[in-house]
View 1: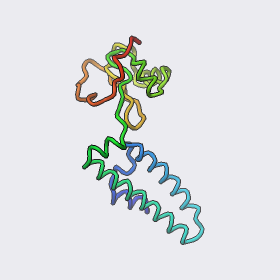
View 2 (view 1 turned 45 degrees about the horizontal axis):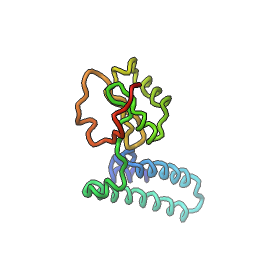
View 3 (view 1 turned 45 degrees about the vertical axis):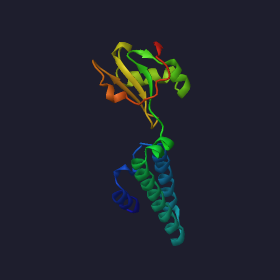
Length: 155
């Protein structure tokens, strides 16, 4: 109930994966919930509850400062990266981001891509997720401000 209360107070963003800190927050919260379930003394349990509240507060502060300061956001956030564009695999981007070609191909298969020519872009998101954008046309706004590394090479 304590975690639900904290999420209601801080907001649904609490368990999002928008930044690497959000991911760490989610993992740490899971560990704290497991620890709280095993606490046998009231003081230990209260310390765990305080640690949970502290994590939520730090995340809230980071989210507020990140929203207000471009400098801070740039300092703590990764930029998304284009791994593939217009049917061409960007080998330099794969190398720089340490994403294997086989992982990229697996993501293309998961997205039901039947031909490289269908792919408008493959993006390594700030969260580490890979998004596959395919279809007839790609709105440039969807891929602005991303690392490209090079023009890419034929796949």
